[in-house]
Length: 250
Ligand SMILES: C[S@@+](CC[C@H](N)C(=O)[O-])C[C@H]1O[C@@H](n2cnc3c(N)ncnc32)[C@H](O)[C@@H]1O
Image (cartoon, rainbow, N blue to C red; front, side, top):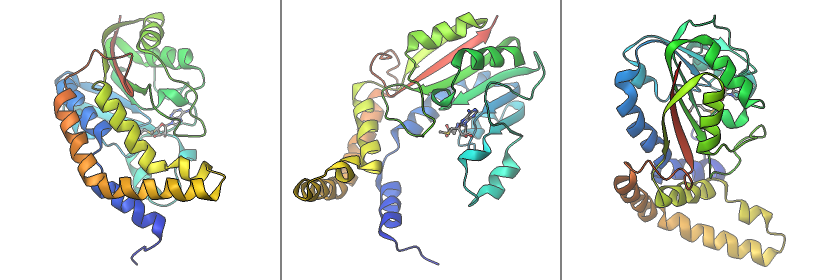
């Protein structure tokens, strides 16, 4: 049955029209890293495995997910795809020194004890094992459990304090990429409209939002242009919506 509810139609439109700069930059970065992804890897908080293709050379691709973050709809497929169900990232059901690599994309900000998390990742990696991690930086809260924003310096500190040598810490593009990512996030949540108390302010915000919706195809083209210009910008870690950390266990 076709779902014609306004909210559903709006999200369909946003999905169709938006250029997803976060995914595009993730793919660019992982393309560069994929040749180093070999052996037995664990993807912590893999979700529905949007980056599985980059683990094609790994002998094993293991994943974790947390049950409480998924509704029953579409759960069957995720159940088949997930190797380990964990409710707390601080205890991984994997033995010491048994992995060649750990990937962890967009999970760290919800982990309540980041130092314990890094310690646990270090425990399961063999010496020389690799860590590839991304974490939101200049980006709005996205879950009721979202707790932290880590600077590049803090990510480095957490890694080094837990037996890693940091090999890279990269921004996701520059100012343009961050501005566009925040704009798209606003379009998906449009909080202003709901927060306005006065009816006139609500109407003006709704009209502004409608105008932006109409301009979305053009703004998405702008997002694509920003991506092309900034996809190799990696040094802007003070002004980025996301940070990539790569490290090796000593
Ligand atoms: C935003 S999703 C990221 C999914 C995927 N890695 C991606 O980049 O698209 C966050 C993931 O973190 C996992 N997660 C949430 N809280 C967690 C916790 N306390 N410990 C471990 N994993 C957690 C969830 O299962 C979910 O898959």
